[in-house]
Amino acid sequence: MTTIETQNRQVIGQTYQQVRTEIFTIFRQACIAEDTCEDLVQEVFMKIMGLDIIIPEQLKGMAVKIAYQKRIDYLRRRAIMNKVHDNLAWQMERSYANTDAEVNDILRIEQKTISTMSEKDARIYCMTRFEEKTADEIVLETGLSKRAVESRIYRTRIQVRNNVRQAIGY
Image (cartoon, rainbow, N blue to C red):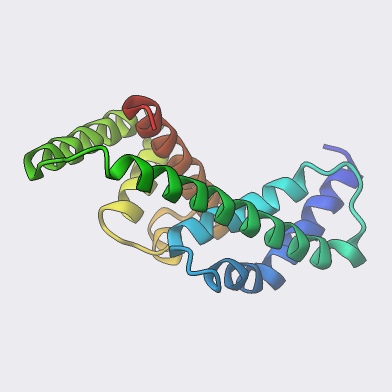
């Protein structure tokens, strides 16, 4: 890694520490679920990490702007999905037994996905998902950095979500 890349990562890391709560609040103000807010915050900084040129003085403003854009995109997708769901809802009548079967299918897909993860990723995912531990609690148990834990949580949630969506055709 070059010196410039190292400096950029340090600047991005410092900015992350400074504005993470503010970025999280941008999403939370739109009544987005907390775990989705965490994912969106991670997406903001993943996008910033993909930039070729970093201007430290403008990084905070850029992060906020990206967050507002992601919030708008998220809300648009959610509105479209709600509209699609509402249109389909009147066409479909689902029994309680079918819903239980679907939930069990989703849980089975989730467990299968977990079994394909690395040991650390699976452990961290299970700690946050089933044991309801925070990133800080996981840091204490695993000895990993908070950023590493948050990154693993983000990646594993995306992996499970994508596998479930793919399996159920969503």
